[in-house]
Image 1 (cartoon, rainbow, N blue to C red):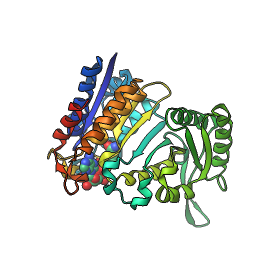
Image 2: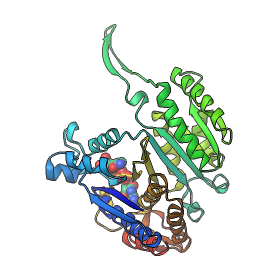
Image 3: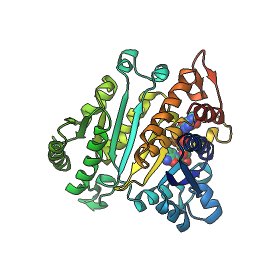
Image 4: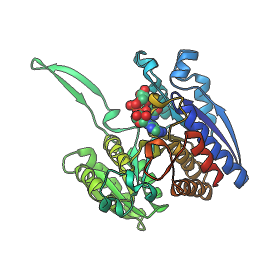
Length: 356
Ligand code: NAD
């Protein structure tokens, strides 16, 4: 197969971690007989420095024309003082909106080799942690009408939370389809005891559940989910939820794996085009040191193979290679433990590539 990948390396450690993901993708292409063509586009602070905007129209075009987009991270102290309209993050929101990326997938997997890095007790981590949060990304309270008015002599602020049936159904289908490709269990998270949007959410999910009888479906309230993620995370396979709940729960879940450097993510549209990125930022404190953990980005590239290119065997090979490198005791500094071998960012990328 031939695929076009637009690469947004970004700022800080972005170029370092993306280079390692590319090394791994190149190896996949070699071993499995594919061809990946890369177009590099400046995004974030580096684009502001060169062009005065966080992404150019030409850059955005390259994202639209691609089969998928691989992102490192954007931002850093140098651009903190930029006006809101040209901040580095502005480019990310623009790309998400432009490409219609409404579904955010964040897998949380605790590699058994890294069990010592999880903050959970051994008993909680024992059942294994391998869950995936499907978060609605373009609706809900973050996008609703916002007002601040004076009422009765004091300021009153309002954020409107709204969901249409089609928005819920769209993300619901992604979640059910994703569950079908995994262990076929889906927990839908809401607050249906108080929120009207949640009641519509639940009704819509129940209707979809009838179309997917193979999927073991359950409803769970968001407050209980926050507790269960800590108490017994192994009960979960796929979790689907609205934008704000997903924002909070996915950060909570990410901590279960020990290091933010291990966590990949995918943002998907209704077609096959997606944007793939590690969940962490540009880590300016370690930029340029060849020290960052590239595995979150490498695992994001594996998600790209799986979800945008339909290359399941290739994705499995990348994930297995990561597991094998960890099993052999290689660690970047953030996941380092006694008796292991500390390696640099580039060495970690090479080790994974060699094992494919
Ligand atoms: P961060 O995620 O960049 O860093 C938090 C901590 O985690 C730091 O100590 C960092 O060294 C460490 N860390 C992050 N990634 C790592 C990796 N791969 N390997 C090892 N350690 C790693 O968050 P921050 O410091 O709050 O933000 C720094 C900049 O990144 C800010 O400008 C912020 O706006 C931006 N940011 C960008 C994105 C994005 O591009 N998607 C996301 C979050 C933050």
